[in-house]
Amino acid sequence: MTRSATATLLFLGLSLMPARAEDKAPVAGLPGGASSLQESYGDWSVACRMIENTRQCAVSQQQMQQNGQRVLAIEVREGKADALEATLVLPFGLLLDAGITLAVDEDAAGEALRFSTCIPAGCLVPATFDAALTERLRSGKVLKLGGTSADGQKTPLSVSLNGFAAAIDRLKALMAP
Image 1: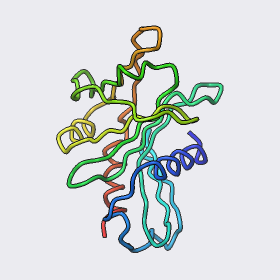
Image 2 (image 1 turned 90 degrees about the horizontal axis):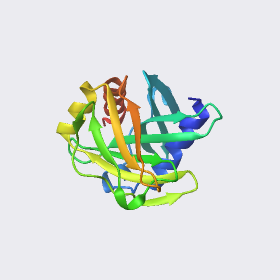
Image 3 (image 1 turned 30 degrees about the vertical axis):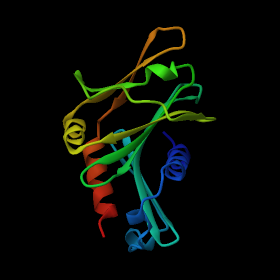
Image 4 (image 1 turned 60 degrees about the vertical axis):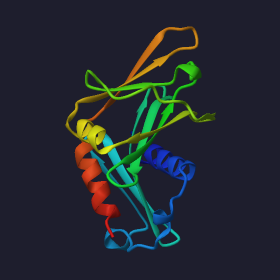
């Protein structure tokens, strides 16, 4: 994954996610006075930027085909309490009404999630990972996504969790007041 691709995903996602009141509070800058940063943890990236004295950080991963076309992307940021808020960017051609199922390794993770909209980059699925699911993600190997193609075929996708725990720890450290 290239830095520019990850940065594009981060900026796309941060602009799509609604701002919360606590996100608007001015905070200290990034380490070393930087205006942005990009770090890698296994298969995950942590990216932050300062906008109007507000720190915005997210953890992300995207998967690309050999021809450079994105297959999927996921961006995760802090939510309320111990929850994490995520946005999945999935490919066109999936049956929107069927939603997307999640499983950590082989264990299902709740009901199917609904698509919110489609944009030129793909179709978006918002998700909230509560504390229990976050712990499963931290210790898991793979997040399995289950979709259905428009022709009714099951379409499995997977997201590596290699480095997820370290990336989330870094996210929390960067977002601490």
